[in-house]
Image 1 (cartoon, each protein chain N blue to C red):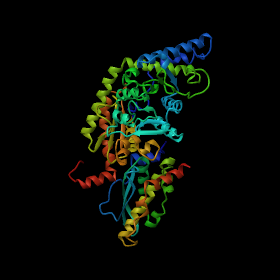
Image 2 (cartoon, each protein chain N blue to C red):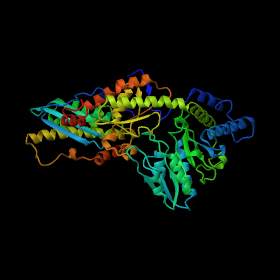
Image 3 (cartoon, chains in turn yellow, brown):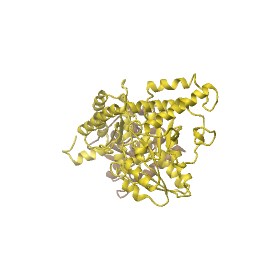
Image 4 (cartoon, rainbow over the protein chains, first blue to last red):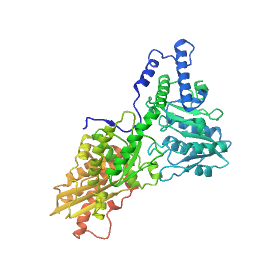
Length: 398
Length: 150
């Protein structure tokens, strides 16, 4: 076992920044009052939530009354999609989304299909992009919702959200974007983008797990998802997760403040890693778009080997990463995203996702590039598929 | 999902990896589409397996079960080797996570496929039929997996 730990899975989750934790702590202990109460410690909690709401609103160019805190990014996606579908079902039952959404959106849409809604899953090109023209062409008189992710969690592809927003606005169709991966990595202004609903999750930008938010533009009709008390202006019942909400706002504030520097750093690590993998390891394929991709995202397929084996060997060397192989997803098929960009199953099984974050350094990439080529070679030497290729091109790569 | 220490040992230090150039029987099972392929090479003298090598494309459990299967068949007669079940392979590894049991099935099939190939070459069985294992498709393998989940 390695004594070194290099965390390269920031798209899965991040640690909580020290400043964020410090901002949260008082709301667990001294200031534990229920925000719905009238006495002083309750009022303090209420004030903390409203300040958090103002912070989030300011950063994304919204009004505070348009920000609703949720229990997760998944909940925000569920609420946005089911809420808009049920609120507008008299107008129509058609929803447009893409084939590479996160399961929080995809499975919600599939559920709505079982409830009688019709869903168009737009295909993507080899880089994972949808075009505004595709969206426009899919719009029908009964289309009530367009939901397209801001940036993909696996391959990092960033969609043309502003252009799609323009089309949705012109047609008067509600437009939701799952910005769980984008938030904290890309500056987002909901007014400029013509977005009507936007989901985010704190633990993707150095905030705590178990708290997210949904931006809902004023005037957008949405049924309630959680029924109960009058919290979140009666639209999302349940006693507020005060420390979580404070943590989300603090984390977003820090992300917004440091974004340019953070992006510069991550893009440098990303591009160096992509370049070195392409240079040092044969039979690889970069998944996703070279430029239109999240600053910290690297996703490669390594031919002739399987992703879980790769992850286990990287883990033995102290590197934490992830893969789109079936074996790591717990399902039978490799990642739906990798299949949607046209990868054959066997290439999709051999994918590796590395997502950089704040604490990563050039030394981490040095170390990665020291161990990764060896591991890939070792697994290939063990693979009957590699043997076949080698026998075919005897003068080929070794 | 957690692998036993034995699985991790056989994954990190697999026994008998490689090829046998003049093998007496070679069997390949699995499908790259499903994410695992095992190829087993046998050297057989007087019906006794004297040497065995494997190559595997697949997850940690696929590599570990291949490695364990080669250990189990080495020195055995072909009749004894044919009696090795997927459960025996899994037990020898101190168990597998339920979703990985299909890897042990593949290991059992790889042994059979290699022995079938040996028998075909010797003219001991009909040459026309393909072995069951080789024609197994993802869905069949996954049935095993679902069974284990239930």
